[in-house]
Image (cartoon, rainbow, N blue to C red):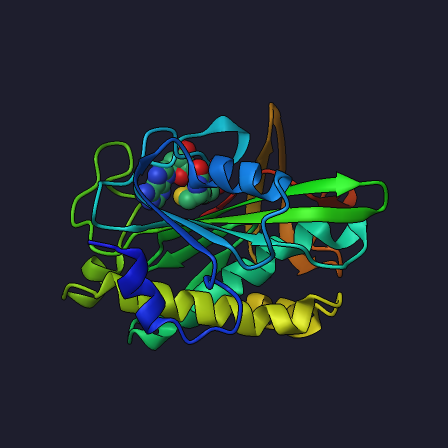
Length: 260
Ligand code: BT5
């Protein structure tokens, strides 16, 4: 079981996770972190739960994870970066999680635009970034992370699309050790980006992404855009070469089309 004392014993961070809230069951760690951030809780505070009754992804989609098997947590950050860079925090979190996953001995973790981390072509982690913007600045950012750790089976329709560290490695993983690694990785990566320099993060993210040079489809609400993924803009926009010219996409879900 995850306990505050055991987690704090293993933490190697300076500030991330030093203020820690651990729940058995909660609606959503992101919702809780948001309430705490509104009440001026400090940067680096982390909310962890063993189970979420309303775990959420983007656009109100559910995040489903068995109790006591996974990592479900949210980090409060207060980066002093200009508003147009706010969306880049998703890339920072993806890269930080991917680096921590690599340390467990898996094949290199892959990043999928905009907010997924994959192992063996399946989603092992989803990230939900929720920013509170005031004028031109970011008041706070909540980085919500759902990492599948020891769950061995996923219900339909996730069965063929989700995986866990345990499935990838063929052995159970110490969740406290894993959480401590991810929080340390987040803190280290944050040192780079808190002042607005995302260059190294975007380079790492791009090197972990398998879609460039391939035909993909992006679904955005009811809009469907198909084209070749050619690059990532400095603000995180995905550039597609479409039959009607280049297009930059900022939100949506991508799927790779089969190679011809
Ligand atoms: C995400 O959204 O991938 C972001 C998920 C963030 C979850 C964390 S858990 C801690 C924190 N507190 C919260 O309330 N949320 C965050 P999106 O890209 O919209 O993907 C959601 C989709 O992923 C769902 O519609 C499912 O298809 C799929 N999915 C749900 N649970 C999954 C799981 N355990 N593993 C893999 N895929 C899953």
